Image 1 (tube, one colour):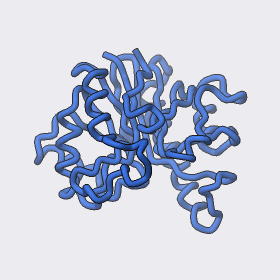
Image 2: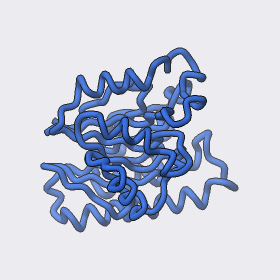
Image 3: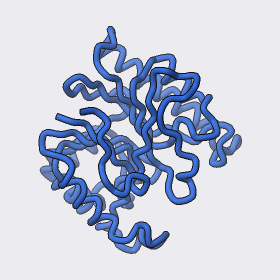
Length: 243
């Protein structure tokens, strides 16, 4: 079993007028490209992490056609929340939705949920824009940022409880980048460093925003490898993160 990652699918089967193709030719046929490369790359025994922005639906019932497409792709999928996942509800309602529709290859993680797969343990939350980044507004974002720091703390505590001796590879999924090319010291980055998280997978950055992508390890954190899994950054192909 291998673990892959691909974020920001932005499926628009239920809302074809919201396809990402309107932004640039770079996104032309992106949904078909995702599906072709996914099935060519991922086997049914593999796991794919999808850190948010799954589709444009605003309610769970509207998302069924997009999730049917996702469920049909090879491998298991572990989803955490993105900023455009307006359909996101309580975990009990989401899991009831999966069961009612017979979607058997999809699961979700949020805050205190963890998935243990082989030698890896996985937890995730949404994250948010952080102070100093161009997306951050003190007035609008401070409370959400601090709330997401608490949620990341809950993720880490859940991983510590599940694997107190840190014998497995710890993987955290965030939708928003926890660091960017020009800012490495953030509240999110500090927490990942202190917990010695092995891999942090994130998405969210598209188009010109990809100039802010940072991958690898920062100078102040020898433990955590940052990986950007935004679909356009990866040419719409899942990236192998654990063999």
